[in-house]
Amino acid sequence: YAEEKTPQASSAQLDDEIARLLAQQKQNAAAPRPPPSAAERQGDLLSDFLREKDRQSAQQGSTNPPAVRKTPEPVPEAPRVTQSSKNSKGAQRLIIIALDPGHGGEDPGAIGPAGTREKDIVLQIARRLEARINATSVNGNPMRAYLTRDADYFVPLGKRVEKARGVGADLFISIHADAFTTPAARGASVFALSERGGSSAAARWLAGTQNQADAIGGLNIKADKSVQNILADMSVSAQIRDSLKLGHHMLGAIGSFAKLHKPKVEQASFAVLKAPEIPSVLVETAFISNPEEEQSLRSDQYQERLADGLMRGINQYFSANPPQSREKTV
Image (cartoon, rainbow, N blue to C red):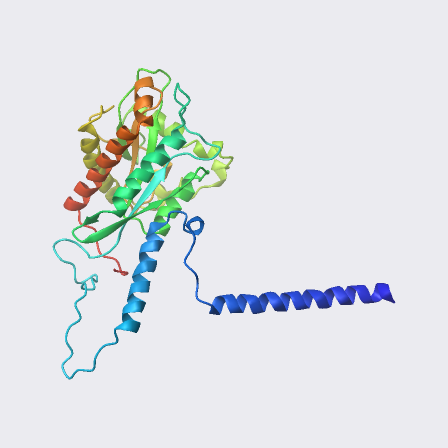
C-alpha cells in the first residue's frame, strides 16, 4: 500500500511545486524590473541608452502633467524625424557602429614572437574605440557602439554578421592584427569586400586565412551556407562603394601616424564583410608577426592613437555621408 501511494505523493508534490513556480513567475512579471547588473548588461551601452530614454520619458510624463490651456504651447523637444522630414544634416537618430574584435576563445588568432595573442590586442583596441564612439555625435546624432564579442569567447563568422544586422548597425568594423610567415612584413591595412576575389595575391591569402576561423572553432563550414551564398542572393555593389569610402577615410587617418602596408583600400572576400546593407571594413592594425609592431600593439599609447584614428575616419565618413533616417527615432 505504501509503495502504491508513493507515486501519487510525488505527483502531488510536483503539482504543488509547479503551481508555486507559476505563481512566483507571475509575481516577478508584475513586479518592477530592477536595474540590470553589470554582468547582465555585458557592456551593451546601446540598451542602456534606450532604457534611459524610456525612463526619462516616463518620469517626465508622471511629474510634469500637461497644463490645461485654451491655446496649447509647443513643448520644447527634439523634432521627430521621419522618412519625409530629413534635414540637410541628416536624420536625427541613433547611429549604431558594430565593432567586431576578431577571433576569441579557442581561436587566438595570430601570435607574435613575444607571445602576444591577436584576440587580446584587438579586443583592447575595440574597447578604446567603443568609449570614443559612445561619447561622440555627428550633427546631433548620438553614436553607440555594439561589440560582436565583449570578452574572450568564440563567435562564428556568420554570427558576427547576424549580430550586426540584428541591431541595425550603420557601419561594421572588424579589427584584426596581421601576420605573415616572415617578420619583415609591416604596416596597417584596410579592406573592403570584393565580389571577384582579392585585389592582390596578399589580400586573397589573408582572406583565406581569416575565413578559416570557423574551422578553428569547430564549426562545419560546408554546412553553413548562409554567409557563403549572400553575394549570390543579393546585390552588394552599393555596400562595396560605401565601404570603400569608409575605408579611404580610415586609411588616411591611420596613415597620419603609422606605416601603411598598402597606400589604398584593398578588397577581398572576407566572410565578415558580407552584410549587404551595412558598409563594412576590416582593419589590420599592424603586423603582430613583426617584433617592432608587436611591441607597438601592446602599448597603451599606440592603441590610443589607433582608436583616435579609427574614430576620426568614422567622423569623416559621416560628415560626407549623413546617416539616413529610420522608422524608429530618438
